[in-house]
Length: 306
Image (cartoon, rainbow, N blue to C red; front, side, top):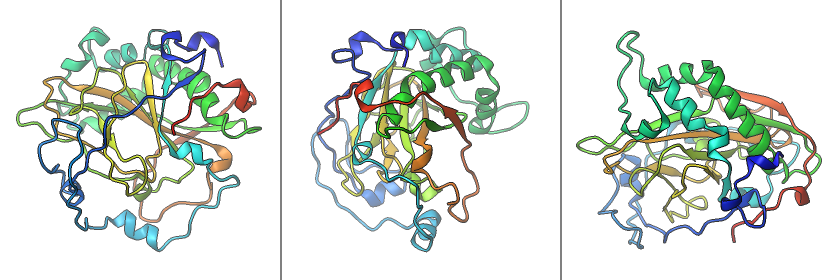
């Protein structure tokens, strides 16, 4: 990977990856979360008692129970089921600037003021209309694929010695979590497996604005553990997590500022079963292939979570 892609201030001895200690775990009412309501007052991240109820099973979860497991050529290394933080040069890749441009904003400095509105011309929802804008922005695509090629791809393939073929989501998902009155959550609690994603796919979450506990994404660190923690990363950092099996959710954004972020999945080609598709899944993210130079573990310095 190109050395200028790294940020010295974000690395340990030139490492591409730096681990961050998370806040104390937060215990939530899982049944309430499934309905988009968080139990109790969550202004702090100190531990809370969980009153766990049986959340209703989704269609995807029912399909998973009756369908075969994926059979990739190589298993997913255990290290990739843990969380990590990657650092990159936000000014060099300038994804925030490209996103501001496609949203019609003068600069990245005002991204947090952006308010989502339905497309008044086509009547299309924001997720659908912005998907096309992201896909068709040559400026954004060039910077995104450079980040995959120079930072994310080499990091991921370092866990698969000898592998050179990477799968990456195209386009990435652009999300805007607005702060409205009353505050609302964005989406609902889920794990990606219920939407047809395989265990070999790794999630990467990249904020383009500063985040706080109520505006960021929350996740459990292992399936069913319920130790909910906020992703308190900054622009220039990428949170890696195993969203296929670990549930994740948002809180009602009461910060007064919009959170703008990108999220996407990548996988070593050998860690994915190309013939496997979960029945009944209407929307599938496009996964493109990228050929990279061979990466050995000692070529990418890592600090892994405990």
